[in-house]
Image (cartoon, rainbow, N blue to C red; front, side, top):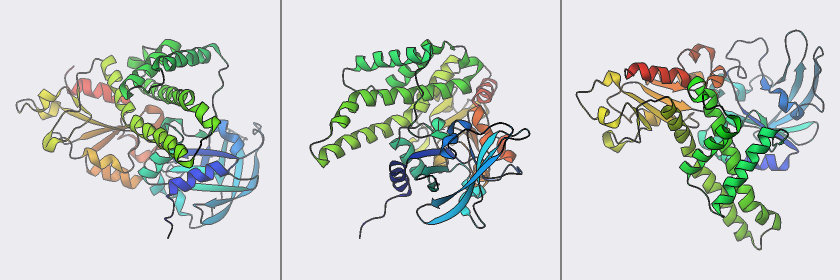
Length: 395
């Protein structure tokens, strides 16, 4: 019997069949946790075309109905609405019917994928498991920070900074001479290009949350540029056999997976160095575990005379809906573990579990609002975490 494709594979195939596609992480606002008077899936304004042929006009409301087939299983006749009157200026999808389980609070932080098959027919997918989310993002070479927009759309180089960015990326790619850089080298190249083009090196100290997201996005842009240069011609030319195609596809996907896992760590290192924080990375602790960062150092951690109250341990995971538990046992001397993530939103149940296990999230400041309101006060921004480490380690 043929094995059924995973949810992520089905969503990927749906995107390829469709005319237009959009994805985003479900926020607390989407799942009704914020107590807003209008729940439903919020669609950012730049992605309006997934719902309507023309932009909404401020001062006017508009709506239409469309059928959405969810998870390849059941349909809803949902409402697409632009709210343009009063103080509102937003797009939403509502009307899912009673018993619609995919927008429950527990799905906060899940990745929703909406695919336009025709004007009246859509397919919808909600990826709850971390493996499915990462497989989908890796396939399209997307950072979690690049969700909340249409898939397959690129920003046009319509100004001097964008043209300079492309020129610097191409110069880096040409220097590779057909090879791929190590993950640490590509992360550094992305930071260097961003800092050269936008000249905001002071943001490392003044706005570290913004800098982290900017570097992360630049690295994804650079990675896609390398792929285009090195594989684009072969893909457009076609393949002599199915095996040749599979070999190239597997090579691309495997490289995406191996690169994605380390980039967040390397960018965090640059942030910590720029803020003059003492740390060691990948310190070997009990049972040969390796937390991503130990402040102020590995030697301090292994010194019984050094107070555990002055130690801080941080893990780094791009997404953490399921894998957050891995940090719990990585450093026995420290009761509270900190976990930096680019995940946008997590369900109240998972956040309650994290709190009970003494895991504190560190999230880029713009993403904190995607979490349930009652847990936001417990979440650190990166800027707050840096200040906390300085105070904790008496810098």
